[in-house]
Image (cartoon, rainbow, N blue to C red; front, side, top):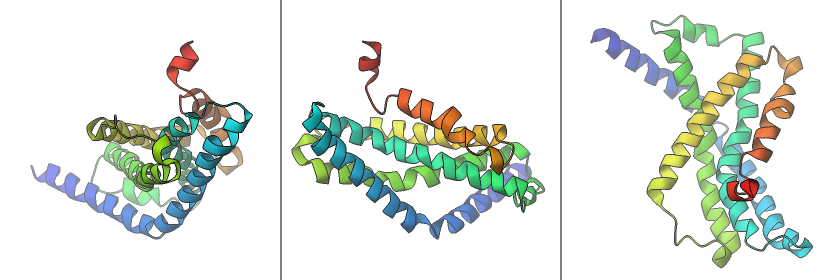
Length: 199
């Protein structure tokens, strides 16, 4: 029992430390997401339909942005982690604490999930504000959305750790986009529905 208590306490202290550090950049991250989301929604909803794209595509795309914004944050998380491993190695401090190394990894995954997901919650109101009636929420299920949101952000956290494991140093950081992120993003269903791909 005392070991579990120590593990739990250490885990939450490490997570809290990450959140204190993240607090300094969250406003900047929100601004980035607002600019990115607004630009993409306006283009896909009001410009691309002039080229023949279906008018409902903007609403579909806006929904996909909730995951995409968190997904693209993987690049930043992985880059910072690789830079630390090849530089100051602050991760070594966490690995010397009286907890299993696997718990440090789980903490990193959860921390990354929170950092990537929390700011993306603003995308739903932005989409509704920009699209109004084009973005109906009549079939919106808060319960289903919550489950998908949590799972997708845990995926982001875990995937960022996978990427760190295959990138040797900052000279190879370009692999993240070209070999992993771009193919998954373009083929992952945020640009088109799975039904479209199947057809």
